[in-house]
Amino acid sequence: MAIQVPRGTYDVLPEQAAKWQAAEETIRELCRLYQYKEIRTPVFEQTELFQRSVGDTTDIVQKEMYTFTDRGDRSLTLRPEGTASVVRSYVENKLFGQPDQPVKLYYMGPMFRYERPQAGRTRQFVQFGVEAIGSKHPAVDAEVIALAMDVYTSLGLEKLKLVINSLGDTESRNAHRDALVTHFSPRIDEFCQDCQNRLEKNPLRILDCKVDRDHPLMGTAPALTAYLNEESAQYFSDVKQYLEELGIPYTVDPNLVRGLDYYNHTAFEIMSDAEGFGAITTLAGGGRYNGLVEDLGGPSSPGIGFAMSIERLLLALEMENVDIETADQLDVFVAVLDEDSRRDAFRLIRDFRDSGITADMDYAGRKLKAQMKAADRKGARFTIVLGETEIAEQRASVKDMATGESEQAAFSEMAGVLLNKISGEES
Ligand code: HAM
Picture (cartoon, rainbow, N blue to C red):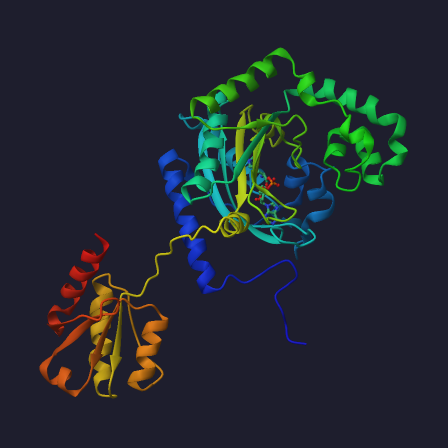
């Protein structure tokens, strides 16, 4: 059988890639406005990094990691997410020593999880994420959430839902943890083996279980919000106030549990409300991780961030029928009547490209009619036809494909004429 792309992965073909680029550009521009700077970390890390941060009892670490032993007998893992790597780098490069905290970082790159593939869920996906590390001010939580929302709204999405929750600090979480153990213990044998293991190690994970989702004890489980101590409740209320300050609507969901262990205080997800989205509607997720830097060997530095996959972003745009504008339009196609004209055409398109005009020509030796059809398929705004006469006179006519109008110009002035027409059209 012919070799195929591995299960859960896909090729991004040129037409789709143009949309990726447009989305990436919007994202980078927003990061510039918000002053988040790019960080690039390796695609693989020591396995222990994810065990210690994402957490030993999570689905990601237990079932979904691409882990391998390299030739030097080290256990390495293709990163399943970006936060662990960014925090590792923050500690390793002593970014906590920089005078301006929080350090505001963003990343965009492939992540890998061995999950059951379906619409919106692949085994390799590209995450855009941000991390603001070094401040525990509630305004930072609101800023991070605002940036995530801005990505979607500035690309034209409208059917969005922001859900937030507070997981509280360690004291609140311990109180909640005890309540969960009391709640589930009497009937834990009705739950899957994973949940039975989770009961002692990390009962919060039970709420996130896909197998026992419909068990009656799930709906009646004690909510975290009821166990927030005063400081945590105040923090949550401050975050909400900052969101209101920015006019960002939200819903509080006391059952929102994230699938990674490092979170405390603010947790949030952005969902799509668009019809036909299928089972997976979460577009982005994030939250605060105040103990993580310390857990990974750094000083106490609180952090918050989120991540979203570009795949789900593009899916949401499709579901809402939003056409994302791509920037790869062909300005001019130069057709030739004979082989001799090809050299001049070749020089001419070089001239155009030097002037920033997108230009192309025929390389298949096709007849004029076929060349013009190709120009049309490529969506050329202008065409130029070169033959014996044009070469002899060193001038030709530039045809506007939309209006059918033509204008003569000397080869030496052609780029300028085209530039004028293009800028005239755009203004
Ligand atoms: P996460 O909720 O595991 O959080 O993933 C964040 C986002 O990544 C999801 O909302 C979704 O858009 C995308 N995603 C996850 N798995 C897949 C998949 N298999 N296929 C397609 N897209 C996927 C994190 O990864 C945290 N590191 C987020 C964070 C950053 N928290 C704080 N800072």
